Amino acid sequence: MTILSERVSQSAFDGSRLRVVLLLDLQDGAQQRFLTAYEHLRNQVASVPGHISDQLCQSIENPSQWLITSEWESAPPFLAWVNSEEHVETVRPLHDCVRDTRSLRFSVLRETGNFQATADQAMRGVGLQSAPRVGDGVVRHAITFTVKPGSEPVVADILASYESPAAQVDSTTRLRRTSLFMHGNRVVRAIEVEGDLLAALRHVARQPEVRAVEEAINPYLEQDRDLDDPDSARVFFTRAALPAVHHLATAGGDSSKVKRHALYYPAKPGCGMTLARLLAQQDESAADDPSAPIDSSTIFQRDDVVVRLIDASGPLDVEPLLAIGAHGPRKAAVLARLIDHDAFGADGSLADEKQMSRFLASADMRLITDRWAP
View 1 (spheres, rainbow, N blue to C red):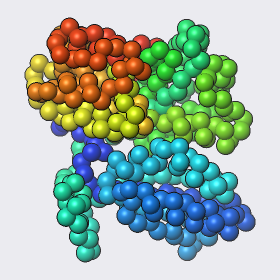
View 2 (view 1 turned 180 degrees about the horizontal axis):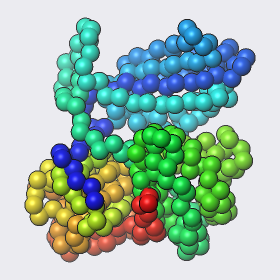
View 3 (view 1 turned 45 degrees about the vertical axis):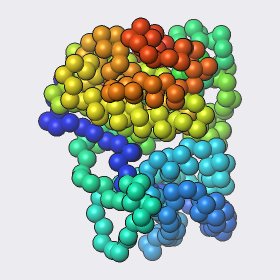
View 4 (view 1 turned 90 degrees about the horizontal axis):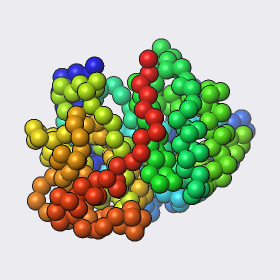
């Protein structure tokens, strides 16, 4: 049982500036190649909307350790850039120069200095994070990929039958929960980690039972990968990453009495971030509604793929409007305009409860497995 003393709300949409910190450990003799690659990256990112500045720093104690920091007007433009195919290709030369990397992302809460937002930035809510967030000590992350049409039953069986890896990673990091869903030929794997997400991902990747599952589904993937080739594996998981952009959990939730669902929202081209923001706003506005069946929700978004992971204390179809994340006047119509209904395979209208229930049934992903760590 998990009892939350306060509402947990973490969001990329609070309008605060973002500080990104990238820690790198360079290979011996790679400094000049790294500097050349960084100059190319710096010139590319300088023209990205929302980018403010960046710095390249070298350790005064260990010359192989480097630090890149960048500042962004807010999280959404950074996420759009870092999840783009352009970014994947731009950073390839950097990875050839480093032994290890670690990326950290922070909203700016307080600062000393003379930063003054422009009038345009102020209108868009650019500034400092208004108040400290309340967290629950859990990091949430997901990956998504597609398999060859027709292979779905085989892939589902493979994913459902794996042996869970050891939950304890180290003294401070522990795997908490893994949930696997499918929608057509799309797979979504969501994990919850207490502690260091990167350490947990590396721990999982090294486990023989996990490696066996990954090798077993390799022939069915639409995107080829070679797990024995570090660059191939890195590019695959970079493209598959589905970052959490919003999480909300209401106070007093009892995890033993809820059921986990994942709802799939394919957005129209270029509308993924707007759709994710709308769902985040609707979850926040519905949080105080006693009739809402949602105890917690996490919204994941990459490009035009949006997935809303929810823990519900009752059947979703009792309140389909709340369940699909369209709380409030005309919000269902806005949601309908953002959905790519051809990709979704559902009617584009959400004009009445019957259509909303049909939409909900179409969005509800098939649960393959949902495992809590012992």
